[in-house]
Length: 349
Image 1 (cartoon, rainbow, N blue to C red):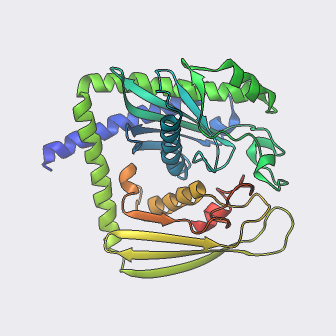
Image 2: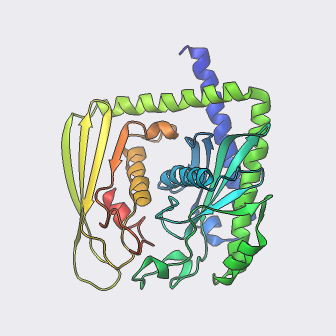
Image 3: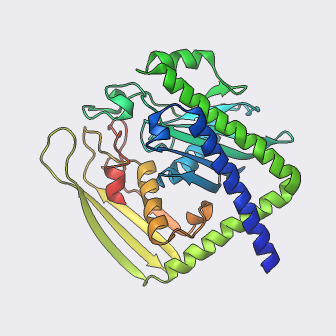
């Protein structure tokens, strides 16, 4: 790749970052939630038509997995239901088991981006809501013995049509949360962020053209992959093992729950295999999404060094095996998981 093409690819990446950052600015300015304005617990992302990430704006790096897994879940749901998306359609997703969320408190709005009648990208907006119902406030349920007590779960649900929350779903959500006005407003703020993405992406495509847009996006993914592979190659080949423990299950049990990781390095490939104690009836269990999210936190903070542009190229050299189902790093329904991001998933990290 010559220098002129490299410069063009970098300018393109910056344009994508600007769109994603403007999504975040819109989300903050339209949300009244202190979780967004003060705690900064939100993220925005753009993905291409294949569901591969083009960039991410977040203060929580673990959302890097949620945007990818959530969008893939929506694409799978569309294929299964057989109803083509239309402009203005969006999906609500917060299910840690089926929707890629770190836990139920993180609600995502996932929206197809259209250009000349064709889906050319996906927009992802995500925030921790002030409440999602259930036995705990704000999606954290220390007393829960099953996932059913932790709050509403949305596997991919097409609850937004023509840019508005469907009135039936609006009534349903409002009737099942403690703070319906701010919760529904925050969902609308994520819709607003998606609207900004559509407008800005259309303007970019008008200038760049769809073909060149795809080419430059793929170049940036390849460049990230290439650089990460070079950094993995600097690690000595071999097998590395580690162990950590979840020290408290939230229910008062005085026990240590083991989490193990095996890291195999071969050339520029890095494989991670996890295992753990059997899942328990407390909210600390990890899921596929929370483990993948925490793995990417470690990759970005140890091999990313802050100068490696994030996109789907970060995932390509990695293979992550969360282990046998039914453990504290790969829980199955009905295990509660509302702190999967901070317990099972974080210990995997």
